[in-house]
Each structure stands twice: as C-alpha cells, then as structure tokens.
Image (cartoon, rainbow, N blue to C red; front, side, top):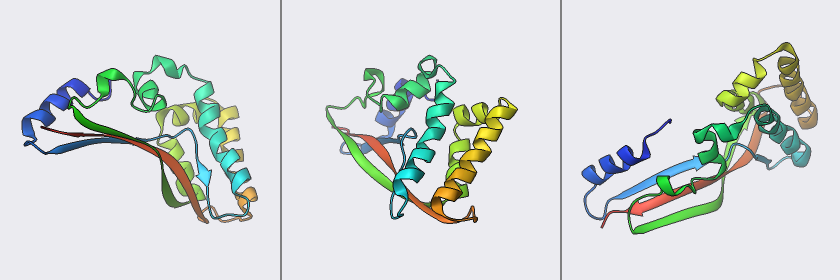
Length: 160
C-alpha cells in the first residue's frame, strides 16, 4: 500500500498536542470541469475521456490505492481515529493551467502513463487527445491557458 494509515495515525497521535489537528486531502482525478471558456462542455468531455479510457483498460478494483481514491476516502480503515472529526465533500478546486499542463498532470497518474505507453495505438489516441483539445479550444498553442475544476475531499480530526 502507498501509505500505512495505521502507522501514520499512530505517529500523528504521538506528535499532536491536545487540540492539534490532522487533515487528509485528495482530489478526484476522474472528472474535470472546464470553466471560463465558451467551449467548456466539449473541452470537459475530451478531458474526461482520458482517465475514463485509461482506467477502462485496467482492473482498478485490484489496486487498493485506486479504490481508496475512487471511493473518496470512505473506507473505515483510513478514517481519522478521533471522535472530533469532520468530512468535507463536494468542494471544487479551480486550477489555472494550460493544455499541455493538463496533459502532463494526466501523465503523472501511473494508470494513464502505463496505458498511453502500452502500444502505438494508445500513443496515437493520446496525441489525438491533445489535437482535439486544441481544436475545441480554438488554438494551435499547447500553452494556451486552461482553467478547470476538480472535486476535492478532506478528512479533518482534532485530538482531544
């Protein structure tokens, strides 16, 4: 597993003073919403095709990390072990980036990178995504500004 939550929470409990807080934060990389662009809907569809297609080629349920993210940190074994705790959902983080910046973000996810690099056909599809994004945007510049939103979720806890 990418993080031993039990060990992490024990260490937090050791170093936190009463009233100290802990936060676990992550974001949903499966859905992106373009904002502030006249062709936002089409751009969003193309952007969302990337994680959808890349994840369809893999059994994400076999990866505990993927399922923890997909289930938005709802697994009982990763909940913050304090009685004074709170969960925050349905908040969207706005990201100011570029077309190429978004594509680099996607490639930072191993399941996307593995899919794209697995064969020439997938690499061609990846290149078509970049072309379709630029066409939908109405630009030939891959560094054109692109503003989009991703859902974030957070677990908060305060030590008594």
